[in-house]
Each structure stands twice: as C-alpha cells, then as structure tokens.
Image (cartoon, rainbow, N blue to C red):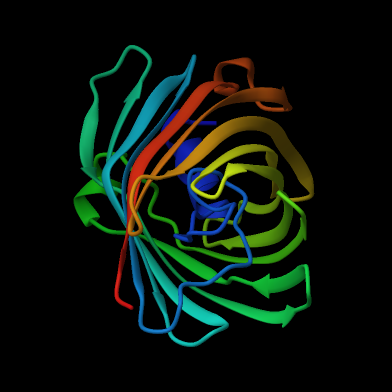
Length: 253
C-alpha cells in the first residue's frame, strides 16, 4: 500500500475530536465529553508518523469543537500536511478536512455513551493531483463509551468507516487516564484499524502514551508519543513511531 494512501486512510478512519476530557487529543481514542454550550475549544497542533516507506507530518493544524448543548458538539479539523515517501521528494499542501458531530445520548453517575459520526474530504484538488492525499471521501461512525473510577477514567471506541475508494475500515481503540493532580493527567492507549477490501483484511495495532497539562484555566498542553504493536501490513508500512503536540484553548463562558 502506498505510504501516503495508508496515512490518509488511517487519519480518516480514526478522526481526532477536540475535547478537554481525559481522552481525545493527544490520544486517538475519542472521549464521550462534549464542549460546554456556547464554548469553542481550539487545538493548534502538529502530529507526525514515520514508517520505512516514508513519513508524514500534519501541522500547523487546527482542531475546533463547539458546544451546541449539554450533550452535543460539532467539530472541524483543518490540517496542513507534508508527506515524503522513501527516495522521493516531499510534498506539502492542504490535507483532509474532518467535519463531525458528537452526541452523548447516555450519561450515568460514572458512565457515558456517545456516537460521533464524521466526514473526511480532501481540502485541495492540487493535493490530490500531487499525491499528498487520496481523492477519497470517508464517512465514519464510531461508538464511544467511558467509565470513571476515582482518579481513573477508561474509554473505549469501536467504529466503521465507509470509503469511496472501496477500502472500508473497522477501527477500535481503548485508553486509560490517571489524574495525578487536578491539572495533570497521564494517558495510555492501544488502538488499531482493520482495512477491509473485497473480503480480505489488512490490520494493525499501535500504542500511545500521552499527557494533558492544564497550564491555566483556559490553556492546556497536549503531548503524546507512540509506536507499533502488531501489523498485517507490509513491513515497510509498519509504524515506527508517531507523535502529537499541541495547545488547547477554551473560548467562551
């Protein structure tokens, strides 16, 4: 599988949504939390990954989430992207926009369940012409669940992505977070994607460790680092390492 194609399909199958809760950026696992009504959460970030087949970097990238009600938010991700296949020159341009909505339809004392459908489309025709992103639209529907136990919070995702390129995907992710202080959390997760093409499957499983540090009431530092656990992909497409670093700002009451 072409390195840029693989990266773009992974991004579309596992969209990141802005949230101040314990999961979400800098992790792949999305949380059940939503932005408060009338509050705009802004994340400015850079994220990258490397494989023997090449490397890809998103940044500067903008991730927005706006609370429509106590249980519903809308989100939009707009990234610049640079990709370089092994032995080739790098290509830079606009990546893929991801627009989504999250609805938390169940909330108990310590548990919550939400659904977060999203649509991923190329931002620029020139990016598809030069091979930076695939000329593919992806619709994803993940189900999110979380449970809080004291300072711990556990979150799980399972979703299905339908691609216009016929390469659909099943995504799974689970994360754990521990609050050392009210402003500092440690995060860990395992996440994976299984691409389904004409009955055949091609999957992988990755890990990521991260942190969330509230610098002020409105500004939070987000950072994570990860790598591969297991893969059915070609050896050159196996993830060597990935990273995420960004700042989140909450605008509104």
